[in-house]
Length: 89
Image (cartoon, rainbow, N blue to C red; front, top):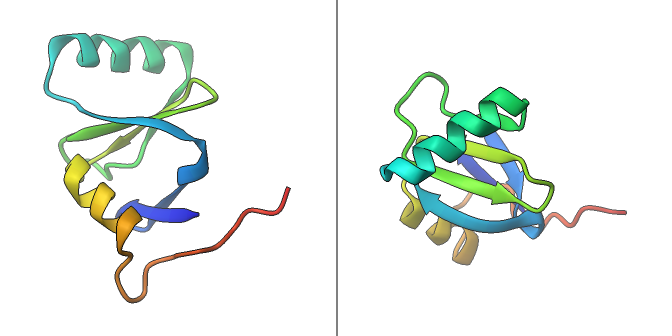
């Protein structure tokens, strides 16, 4: 299922293993390590990072949305959101 994580960016939620807030120091270090390794995907469009989506591939997706907002989009997608679009493998 593809879900909008802000500003027209979408993520395959079947590949997400966790969503965490970005305000703790260990998370900030995790973000910096991912940036250094080329594993960070910045989907904030220049805004403050509020949450991180941890992917099963080891990538981190940085989002300007709160984790609660993304969670609500997963459980009850808004009209016009990308929803129930299964990725064909």
